[in-house]
Image 1 (tube, protein in one colour):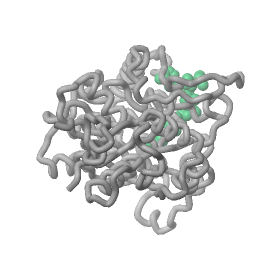
Image 2 (cartoon, helix red, strand yellow):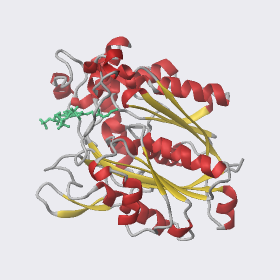
Image 3 (cartoon, rainbow, N blue to C red):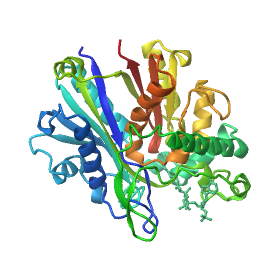
Image 4 (cartoon, rainbow, N blue to C red):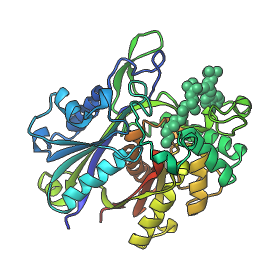
Length: 392
Ligand SMILES: CC(C)(COP(=O)(O)OP(=O)(O)OC[C@H]1O[C@@H](n2cnc3c(N)ncnc32)[C@H](O)[C@@H]1OP(=O)(O)O)[C@@H](O)C(=O)NCCC(=O)NCCS
């Protein structure tokens, strides 16, 4: 097997998916992808777009502007027709799946240079857009338990996650994200992109739109669940609707050495796993368990963890079930620079974005750590876990 090293990874800032307030409301999702491809090639001049074997793009909702966005976005950006693309979906883990497939192509020797990307614009292509569920599915499941918010409520109830603990997690997520942003820690991964402010004035967006500088715990405690009467999950403890794109440059170690490129981390292992779709947020549990079983590793071997915060209820339940960290925020290893509750969660993008952030977190916070773990859940019980390793 070849070794697959991760040369670089970049992302757009995350914008709010809102038709009047979103900083990227004037951009299409393919334009966000072009921005990250341009940024990646600008930073890695030794690699020419035509030398890329293939581009794999994760996207949760592949319809409308996001229909075959892998291929169409690449061509629309002016990139070579000779480079093939594959648009990949398994809901939120899509960007992670794209990364796994790209890494495996390199490890098997079928490719030398791959781009793994993720993109989602939850304003232009709403969650569940054009969905036509197989009617037979609802002989097996209760349709009312399928929406994401309903699954988050069910997880909170089944795993006894209190509203107070969820709100505490959201407070910490915003605090850590704000501190990381103010310290310039996201600079290495964010490619600034032109956007528009609320009045419609153009400006260069350099930061994520969602991070709350001031979280008001009193207001939070009074917020109502949009998902269930008397529910406990609110907008504050849910990842918000987001727009964003990211991409990574993966290469065989041999090729990287030939081109004189430097690298710190390589892809080690990746698994997908499934769970009951009505508690889809628990999918990191079978995913991480499978990864640990197959690699012989455990939580103590991991230096940093990015666990996507789709909802505070599911993140807390997964952290506790897997014994990844403290029972409650603040966490030591998990989401050191905040998570999706603060940064946003552009569905199909996040699985790749958390791998990029994981590398930056490790380089900055735990440079001696050997392993880093990224995991996330996705609609309908999709889950993924991916392990990176410091190159020796
Ligand atoms: C929860 C959800 C329905 C809320 O949507 P929304 O009503 O458009 O939410 P907003 O983000 O505009 O927030 C609503 C209110 O909550 C407030 N709020 C949100 N987070 C807050 C916080 N941390 N503290 C205080 N107030 C907060 C907002 O300020 C806003 O109040 P305002 O109207 O007075 O300004 C939406 O974000 C959602 O569906 N999230 C989940 C997405 C999802 O399922 N992803 C897939 C996961 S697998």
